[in-house]
Length: 161
Image 1 (cartoon, rainbow, N blue to C red):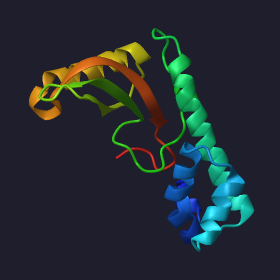
Image 2 (cartoon, rainbow, N blue to C red; image 1 turned 90 degrees about the vertical axis):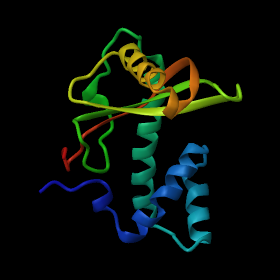
Image 3 (tube, rainbow, N blue to C red; image 1 turned 45 degrees about the horizontal axis):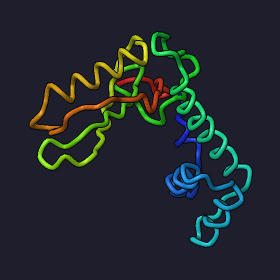
Image 4 (cartoon, one colour; image 1 turned 60 degrees about the vertical axis):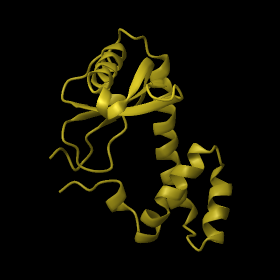
């Protein structure tokens, strides 16, 4: 049976995983993350920490590359990072839909997750997410300005449900 990335980590590394992800999102170096983990009693072996940091930085870099992908080009699914858990479909994309709240006029954004077996172009995914938000005003309560593709995953070793 295939093993997921998280299952391959020690209990301590799985406990530290959310803190490591946050440190990477905030732009901290591996040394700063390791120091913070040690201070909080969650110190890891350097090699284990670096494996997690490299994987998460790859995902972060791929997400930023999605912004540069031409709107009419299909996302290369073989380059998508693998999901940590089982997914309902073989691909999952997150689209940030931005706009204004209908009642207050304040800027807001909603994240819409699209699960699919066949890839679409970034523009098709953004259009679908915008349509979902606009079709449910009682749920989302916003006037949509635009959207952007923020994340993409493919099913990992655990497969789909």
